[in-house]
Image 1 (tube, rainbow, N blue to C red):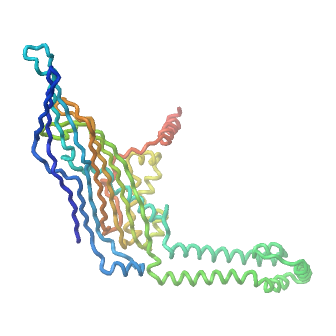
Image 2 (image 1 turned 180 degrees about the vertical axis):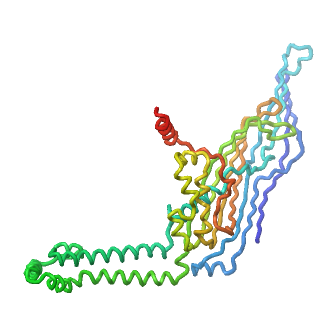
Image 3 (image 1 turned 90 degrees about the vertical axis):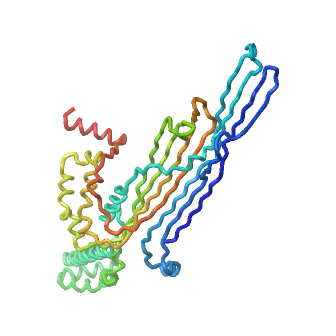
Length: 413
């Protein structure tokens, strides 16, 4: 697994300046470093990945690429300097009043803090639940084989009904209905001839005119045949049975920390605002098993069906995702895992402001950014653990109003 690391570290002094102003209007300035030079990490990047042999050739051939692990992490800090000023003012009328003002200016290298990754708030459960839901068909980009199978079956049934309806209309003397069923138009002479023959011998008239309408129903039979041939080809191609679904879950969390200790020695306090933007993206490749059709009717997961039948179970799911957990119980039976990956991205932005150094307000702000992206191979079908049932209140204005309406319905108010 190749690894690259880029690290930019700079040395920052702690400048100290003292300005003395005297009563006679003169002044003097002295400067030095009041603290040691400190190494500050302004930028850091680390990347790890797996090389796929013959990657470019496989990509040109549009072959299935392996699900390799991948991670990249980088952070950077602003190169700001905070300034805290301490002032002592003396009256010139004092006995030793030559000194009017004593200013002590402390410079603080903000990049001492570097960048902090921050806590993780978003789990993989929401993304896995969406993968399961889409695989079951809610938003599933259906595998070609099964999609065309349904279309072919529907076409055969529809064509059979059309042909039967057209022939039945002919036997009943309804030439117009037969022509409409086959989406063709007849001539006036054709209608007169049919009705004349029908008046002599209805059965023979229907049979003879049915042969005359072969140009209307034969193309339908041809379409069914071609569709069945295509379906047979897909049935022999295992790749056509492979399903692929994707899903993304996102969350933004803001945390404000007052009186945050920016620097311990000397003590420097500030207000810190942390904004964490997270996303989890999943890709799952699978093959439906022979049990999938049974699962579509809920026969493999009675627990989920029972939960849905409970009164107001959907209200409970607004707080505890019980239904989401139960819906995933039949996944191992319905789908064969073929591959996939789960990716996680986090962007952490921290803003430091309102600095206080020993009671002295310090001017300036400081910001740090941390970004991490990782992708891990899925070794099994996405499943939800029992621990995924955690308190997750998802109440918007619409749901609050719905809750009020439901309570009025239940309690008769």
